[in-house]
Image 1 (cartoon, rainbow, N blue to C red):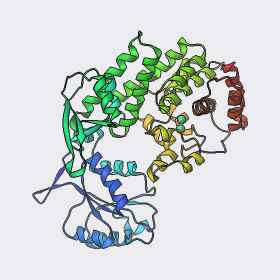
Image 2 (cartoon, rainbow, N blue to C red):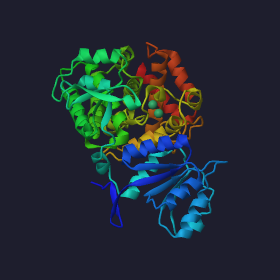
Image 3 (cartoon, rainbow, N blue to C red):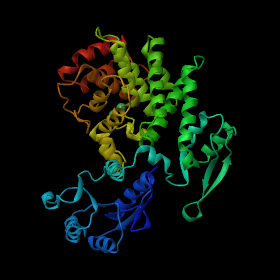
Image 4 (cartoon, helix red, strand yellow):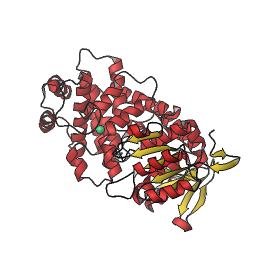
Length: 459
Ligand SMILES: [Fe+2]
Ligand SMILES: [Fe+2]
């Protein structure tokens, strides 16, 4: 357990950091730092404000500074002041680096060139504090923790007291609606949903218990041979939402690994039971599940179907593709983000700067998460990184490099097919126009063989 207080000359002080940046950036950074690290954030809008605060004998664990053009924030002035006064402070300079780093080589200064990469900044701060993920989990972020209401649907009994939130800001209050161990009436949940309730709340310190409980329930459905395909599909849809919703906070916990393994194994067994891919695809087209889920599920069906045409295919490749399908867009938290498939979609979409940044880097970020999962089938990391054709997992490329491996090209075709089928809601996968659209998307030679295999797989 890490200590939220530090002893300075005998006095116990709360850990705090200073954020030197504009209002908007402060809101986003402080929200994340407080939620993840539970550290007090103080705001300075200008260098002189920051210097005054530092001189007032405040002890900051770190100072995050985001200078902008024409702003009254000068990283150089802050660093010079600290250097002259010989005080030890850790600085994180976010954004472009205008400073000659050699001048400050004796100091703790870290440069993060991406202004919206808050995740990396928070991660760096947690490293500075020597905080582990377990530590973070043991610190409540706020008294109540929001859980999307539809996660409750697969629970027979509530694993903890559950609250609804009424009112806003100063009038906000949390009212207990379900006691621990009580049944969750589907009707009551539907009533809340119809009234526009999106979240129910549990006490923050119970969030791990809640995730464990929901995981257990979902895994029971996956293991139950008597469940219909649609019930299994609904369970995997929920699993994916649980993983996507919690992966930021929980990182790769044991529960999330179990869920992901269960989902990947289930996709393979569905494909083994159904030699005809379009039956499974049609099941997805008719279902009212999330786009994200249907997209990864159809990608898996198509990928496994193309793979079955390959003489070199083995069971490890099947696991690789099934796992990759489940995880490839896991960092994207909404269907709208999952619908982006090229730079034009990204520009035209109604996304915040941070969402845009995440979409641009989603292949890289999703791959980084999967790297932390032990015993992942070979190749998953590189296929996820390259699934939009760029070798480093950033952006959507129109010029696909020739050097992509066969499994990457296979996956890219499968993912494209899934996208076309689901977006156009074409009821028939065999349609010639799908084949033509896919061919148009991948004109380079390295896709040739896989495109032939795709055609054969749907014949
Ligand atoms: Fe995707
Ligand atoms: Fe993607």
